[in-house]
Image 1: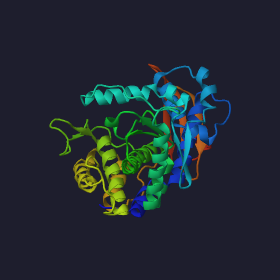
Image 2: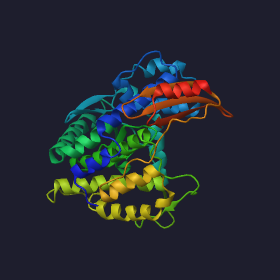
Image 3: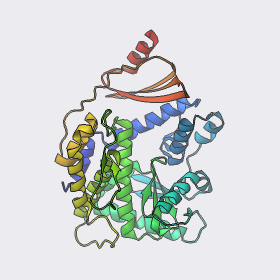
Image 4: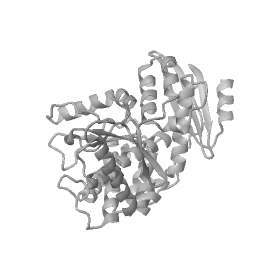
Length: 373
């Protein structure tokens, strides 16, 4: 299971290459903004912005009236200072607007630290704060080191990372939150090597999130209950759901690929997960294989790819059959091999948004079938 970066890139390509995943993801957020009432198409800069993606998610989850927020969302492109990462651009979330919009992230980090017995509130570093520019320079050096050591790994992961937030608490380590897709967190005290590890670790999570968004990659199938796994390095009584096991397996596979790319000349700190990545990935893969019956067909397909290097043809037909009852708004996007359907349906709790990825059927056929019903 020790994959090179090139092999790992091929494994990821069984679900979709970086360009395809990016196109599908932008299509999804474009459709969601249209569903919310956007009057014009958003730019790629807006669609990629983690602050916009987070706000769209919050509006949909909380059922708020989006009209007062759409004007701001459709114009938000500036996140902060820009870094060049090969052919990709990374942003440092250091603008005043970024800080204002990341209050929720700070609350989540505070809660996570409290769960570990650490009581403090991390602060996000902003332009003008002590240590901000020094970290930005160190971050650029770390990015350059990763690109030089493994251009393939950088090419594979960087398109899924749009912005980096800097916190002043070392105990945070590297982190990413699903509610802020495309954004990763690094502590201001991180060394160049720790920055490289954080970019790969969190970049792996962001890539898997984009795959799950655009490929219907739900991990646990219905009817199996809440399957939990207890990795050997966790404290007694602590267990993970299958989705978390999958995310950790994928991250450890990427870190093991990093170790194989840079060789023994790199010295990792004592807290690094890179030296244990292969061992932990192997254990997690065995746990998932033991619970394979609880996975969806796409989950089993991706597990097969991660463990053997190859994957069968997708078993998800996505034939476009959608229950028409209660639908009051439909937005579609047509791609070469699939169709995206985003709809709003009346429910007991108000209006629910549903997302479907259909293969083998066009958006016009889906709209026709829904109209007939």
